[in-house]
Image (cartoon, rainbow over all chains, first blue to last red; front, top):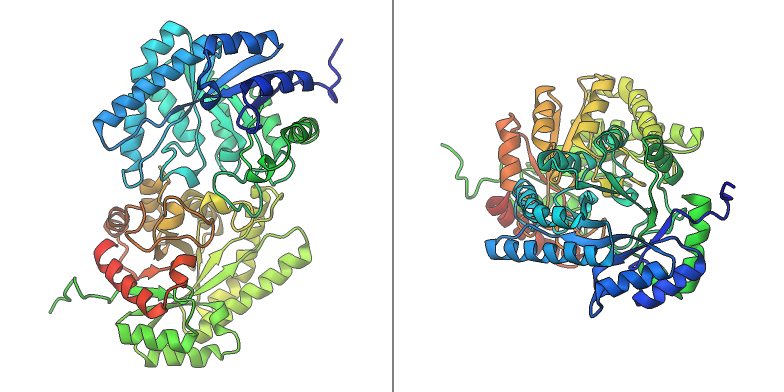
Length: 277
Length: 277
């Protein structure tokens, strides 16, 4: 029997940061009770936890671990800081493996005042340095291109084209892309680059939320699906035409939504997932 | 005798919105006294004024009128609103001619929820509809690509490549580009697109300010040159290698700077123009 599309949450994944008020155990119980299928765990939610036990707990609740968020932040002015970042990324990969997450999402980093081309070089070196470990543990790495408004200090990878270029350069089957509509929706080159992403088998993750007008905060004023101007149905249809059939991950940073009870927010997530995504 | 580079303000132009506390007459007097060479007049500063007399006043003070800011905002859901926008743009072109401004800067517009490709089509139609008037008055039109964070509601032209594509489509010697480092600095394609802009003789204007980290407001938290992370010297050197030798226009929207006395701000503009631009 085919799933009823109006109640089908088999591809709905929620990021723990979206329901920020809940600790990991609470999020797991609430997601499972609500019928959510997948969870992307942010690293802060693992602090003080045994990741292997957390993974067992998540799977016992019937949820799929979709990814670990996030590694990255490779660039730095000092060589020592770059080495520390690589060590931290190795820990993220180990934690992902222990948790049973097949994927680490990478917010690649940038340094105010350092050229973006230098940062991109350091990002490539940083990812390359963690690839042997990722291989030995079978963990995939997803480069997430970030909106150009984060180019100063969060990522020097600001378009899908640049992410694809970096993947080409690293040329490794474990390195792919986390595709987030918030960062990419404006790009006039999106269709061609989506095809390129899919054809290279590097469409590793798909994140949704919405773009508010006005946006009152660069970091924490994302909209829930349908609240903003992103053509969510159009982009989803495009990525699915290109073969993507993975989880739809709801990743909303919003001071406005975080001020409400997480249970209420989760109901809205389910509703807008079905009706606007 | 060559101008002393340490006191040479022959290419310094200031936008009236930068020193927002001053009305037009006051800005003209203060700029002239400070040795600023050019002024870009924002349309609000012409309200209730005779633009021709304003132009005469500006020239009598020894200042060059660099451009009129701004036309644009062509896209709209309703045909009637689009027609009104075209009429308003014609008024801007007439005011520019009366003022003696050789150029109108275009912030092209976007409509939340309307596809960016539809908005781009409406922008092309809107500009085309004003070209006969621009021709008859000899006024140039400069498409200003805006940072992607303004794609929802301020401009569907978000990269230098898209601005160049639109210029190609309109294919008219009066249509070119206003190049603002704030909007463009992050673009990995900047060097190639700068060359393309210059080779097509459409490098009509150059605006400077800086990108703050963090940026606390999407509209009015620009930095003064040197306060932020933009490689202003590198970009200027690149555009000059490509043949640009026009005015350097200081366009800073900043609640922080606007809270200070404009005279103090103007001194800082002169200092940072010489030392960081």
